[in-house]
Length: 496
Image (cartoon, rainbow, N blue to C red; front, side, top):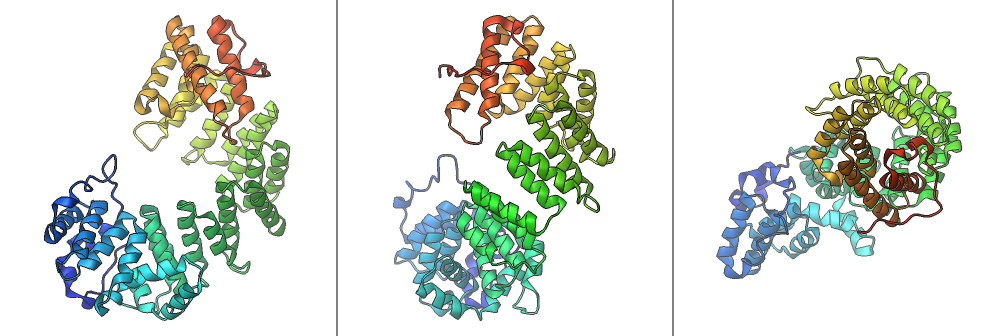
């Protein structure tokens, strides 16, 4: 989204780089590795030198350094038209909103105090606080539809254009590009149109991006049940609660919504919540209830519901029911639809986990890899394809595929399961030392995972894998197969 400045406020904006005037300067530019490299240089410049250094940094879109230099110039005796505004803009672009607010509050000239951007910064700051002064300021600013319109609509003030249309078409994309700045815009938009559910949803998404979960929930709770966005707002609230670790509240929101408005989608989301909590019996019941509302829903949502139920059946050891639901999920999606690849992958993965249909798994995964929209198939597909080749007896091809996938991302991106399976392939190919090397890597990674204390980790599955890998290191592939590994009562983390 481009931002057109009200240049009549001050002619000094002509000194800004053109990309600032066009609005493209609001795109985030990362600082150099290790942080900005301008701190040691600041002492070498006087007011004019700092100003010129700020211009150079802004030209390179190094906004962190530009803000530092502009602020020194603005605080010195050096006078340049609009230099305070440039310092504020650079602070906004650098994500230093505290400094931007301080600069906006320091303006004394009417042209700077009343400019669109200054008012946007001050209103957004007031909207983020809850005190009498902030409320008075926001009340006074509510009539300023001119700067709200100028910011959001890239045009002269035009109160007749609904803000919700602008938010729906442009602002959510901007939120992805620069969430913190989008939060400022959205808070300002909410002042102008407090009843707008799209504005509230976009603001909440931006707040969640910045881990401001309570603020996001507060914004969304004001959306009434009478508007179309109500259901989606409840799901966003549940996501915020989940991200904040408030699992019980998340469950209450989903259960209440599903009871009030039973639908395939709501039951599916509730089922996913139960599954994530390892309550697979409840998950299966929820997915099953949802399928009673399947008629008229999108094919992919129906398929996702069957997939969710299949995964819960698999966790409970219901092999036939799991495969039957996987097959139903695949069958719903037309063969020409690329979305089908995701469900075919899950079916092939299930076969491999169950130790059956290896040849079919190879054929399916090869087709899924070919359907990839990128030049290379997703790495998890390549990893499973290598596993399938190994299970089907083509150990050299399995090694080549898995090693190539690992080469693309490095070991840090891989789960211990890949190291274990690559070790299996090397062992079957007669390369015993390489096999032990990869099993040892898997053992080491599993020990770290289990010691991390992450509540989202499936300890039961990882403890089983750790015991199995220990056995392979001791006895090679004479160890028990994956599907028959006993669960030990304790484990011993690998050194390191």
